[in-house]
Amino acid sequence: MKSRITELFGIELPIIAGGMVWCSGWRLAAAVSEAGGLGLIGAGSMTPDVLREHIVKGKAATQKPFGVNVPLMKPDAAQLMEVIAQEQVPVVFTSAGSPKKWTGWLHERGIKVAHVVASSTFARKCEEAGVDAVVAEGFEAGGHNGREETTTLCLIPAVRKATTLPLIAAGGIATGDAILAMRVLGAEGVQMGTRFALTVESSASEAFKLRCLSLAEGDTKLLLRKLSPTRLVRGGFFDAIEQAENNGATEQQLLDIIGTGASRRGIFEGDLDNGELEIGQVASLLNGRAQQTVEEVFAELVAEYAEAKQKVAE
Amino acid sequence: MKSRITELFGIELPIIAGGMVWCSGWRLAAAVSEAGGLGLIGAGSMTPDVLREHIVKGKAATQKPFGVNVPLMKPDAAQLMEVIAQEQVPVVFTSAGSPKKWTGWLHERGIKVAHVVASSTFARKCEEAGVDAVVAEGFEAGGHNGREETTTLCLIPAVRKATTLPLIAAGGIATGDAILAMRVLGAEGVQMGTRFALTVESSASEAFKLRCLSLAEGDTKLLLRKLSPTRLVRGGFFDAIEQAENNGATEQQLLDIIGTGASRRGIFEGDLDNGELEIGQVASLLNGRAQQTVEEVFAELVAEYAEAKQKVAE
Image (cartoon, rainbow over all chains, first blue to last red; front, side, top):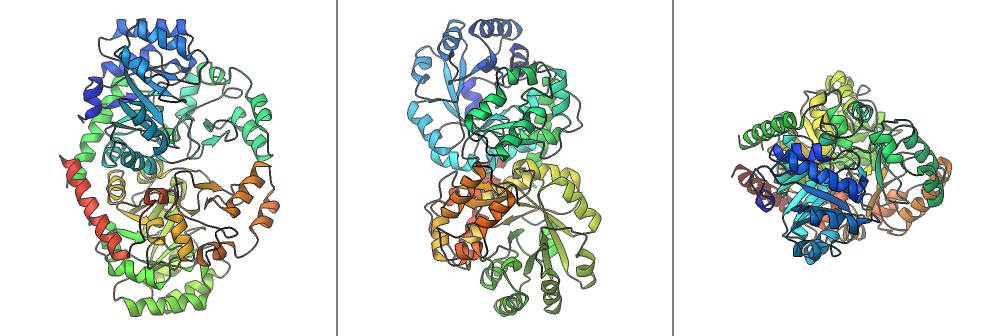
């Protein structure tokens, strides 16, 4: 599986665990890096102080490199970046904002930068901004999502044509077969969210993990197109938003339904009725499976990838 | 590329051209079968008499097998089936209805049956109904679409797990790389719509083809969820529906906007403002390309597939 992505980050396998709100603490990030991939701490749900604590604990748990994901729309993004620089984190994944804003600043401090996009237009902007790698994330992905609704199968070849940057595929990838399929489409690595959000090491609540391991096809949907398109899991929160949208709700009416602290309530505290539940569409492929450790996930991915590669060569 | 699909239909390459309304006449079907794939006449936009004419002309144009796609919700489906049996068409692809309804009747007449599904639940129903192959079509596909909104990347592994039937992947596939990626995910053949709808041999209007060869990412969207989810191309018709849906339009209000003859007007007559335009999301990957003949498309697909296979074996 060696590629420009393994070289860039100094890792063994080009498998990155997405930095997910309320899931991606130091335990998950360190476990993924220990297993040979690249773990990311998800700063989207952290204050600067909490982020520092997670970085320090992560460094105590593994000698291997891990990174931090920073959603640039976060009001305290600058303070989070300061913490990252002070703690000498070697890799930052940025999302939800312009790649021009922080890439130079991070490079000056010796930090490698990948940026998450949902279109080839933004992939070209990444190249102009000088990022080191681009993550192209399709419609299948959980949580916040692109306006174009381009699926991973359509997006990866488009981004591959648009840029020469090292390319990481994301959205809908949970198996070794899918990793190989992404390589066939021109990706040099993958970012997986759902599969790792549901591991033992994820900081999500047990209730959330169990719910996500019992989803049928169609149990996640992209909603909130009038605000910021977001893939949600069916439940009380989902139903309230879907019904309001079907009735033509305005942006303000949707904001009122969302309120505050919804994703913490849903994912971290396990309030499946009133909380916001975010997971990728590919969760239904894991239906009925038990929670696994990160190590078990990696062993499976590597074995599946090797088997798929052998089959396709026949 | 040999597989159970090439064996089942007696064809050289497991590449099927979807039977598309206003695109898939005898010219396209015969050209695809002549090139080594399986062409389908799209009966969705034909009366029984028109279908008979197309079958007769198709048989005059090629000795190789071609089939007919019949949307089962069509009020004259029974008459279309009678024509197919009388004209001894060897293959029928059914969609938009229960696979139980016609499979036995067609088998009694020596006709092979494939059924189009958008979920593994319906794939299991196909197996119970005794169909010969299942087409699993993802969210990327143009026109009518599944309610679950499952993308091809998530759908193919799910259907592969759900059934042992020969499996044809559809939705978002327009290149040889994508055909190989689908094989990696467990498909044994592909059905491609968009790529063939835009060939010289397609009966769609020039205006429609040119519009579809100039789409950007995000220029098709799935709308009409309250009726039957349909992927449409941006334009006057699209805008009217999108705006109505944003304002909470009822089913009846949407039906009033759609009126009658919309897809004929858009696709066949080339009225880009007032007509209904249906194409797959993958059209944007063909942006800026010239119209090709079916023969040129096949040559490209085969070369791309071989190159991708070699690369992945390295």
